[in-house]
Length: 461
Image (cartoon, rainbow, N blue to C red; front, side, top):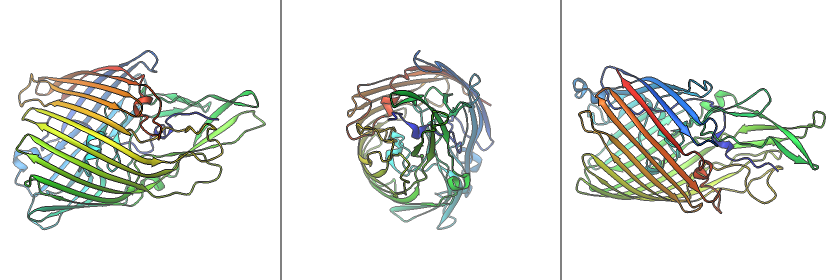
């Protein structure tokens, strides 16, 4: 039987999108040019992965001349490409919206339009799961949250704020792209894609070649799908916080359906991969408590309820089921330092594989999109001061108990002058098992060999 890990992340990019981290913002658009080089262990291909990035960003909110304006706009647009591997590229946009400010009181109901990052759930913010808002995980070890695209409405009372989102446009996650060549074999163009499907399988005691084909749905079926979100939360002025979110939207990734049929004439096994387009309901409840200006604590409960889709008898796939997530967190923050300690527990979400090509031993052909099952994370950030010559530090440690995995990430960014910065960092990853007993949590196991050192420079002009 087939044994192929993580195909749900190996679709050729159907729609490309993403996000850019910026250090400065102003009414006039800024442009940036950056270069990064990632060096991986020798068992990863390619071991050296240079990245060239360029783009623009703008934000009227932070411009002094616009602070009294009723309207605001914010956006970024850029491209990343690897000069040595030009098939590895993406177009990025984390925010791209215009509308009336939330804090404007010119009207009772304020609207904004476009692509906007809101932060609907603390789970996405802390763990980059992409449950509600999609993520740019072209670099899966440094994922970026992205905004939803559509119409946003906002209003508030003395103690509560309300937000509504409506859309018929869907932009999914960006994942490490791979290419199927003319021989119907997968070719890695991003070292984090980890595409390692089998080239042959044993049939009647003989190795039989496999040939892969992607059956991509029409772009209209992917991009034009309805969604809505509703959020009510207490105002920030209240020490005890509460939030409730309810929504219906497309799942931000594409579970894969596999069809394999023996071609007796050519003595091979063609494999057709089809992305499944699934919608889901999301329920999110959060409680938090703030002590002074430095300490805050909270807990999040999230239910992800996918809509059951029809699976043909000749398709092998992993059916999704309702998942339940609980995430408590604690945060200490000063003018420069931020320390966050958080835990995540996830149950459900996956069923056993169905279809004619399931593994006889019960293990799944596919890796799941449930990144964690039972994990603890410690995150430390040191934000830069207004002047240059002060570093930004990010240090993160994650331990996944279900597969006994550890991930240490460290980045240091130094601003030589206000517009020119350099950074150095890296990742160390280890895992004792490939998957947890109840599936999921395979994210770190799949990337356990991706230890790397990364460095680069960025110039803003």
